[in-house]
Length: 227
Image (cartoon, rainbow, N blue to C red; front, side, top):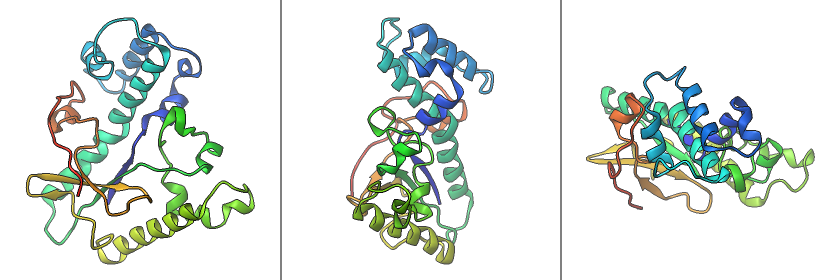
């Protein structure tokens, strides 16, 4: 079972780039991409700008630049590697070994205490952990009013998914494997609709080749549908 959170890059980028703690410019964006290239060699700055900023003009607001870099950093650090790992494992494993993937699109108020403000940072890296480890069931004794009954129920649901996968090799009967004919099934992990399956690549529509040599992304490489 593999998974990502919707906005993996925000919290990770804030920890690695001091520029993000104040307003940033186009030059800051370029400098951060260039710094990232010291780990991921061969990145094309102009292609990155074209995809994440939609153009190469040097006149973007600080918020536009920040959100674009969050998306880029999350894709290259977490989303692409996770998707490719699940994809390759599914392609090479027997039918008895099911591969399942999710995208977490929900977090509780407790996330703010952990340094993630959903309004500006989205669903951050690590936001699934409180539900996997059952924090909503007890942590309000230390931090009152950080969880709702929905959070408690969701945590119980998530713990059962993880436990059943460990015991039986399948999270639940409604969750399809990552590959179904020509479709890629990625579960929308969200308590408001636990049966929703988004048929898409969650990596900002990056193609497989783009993930292997990270950029440039290709538009229209997949379709989106809801079951």
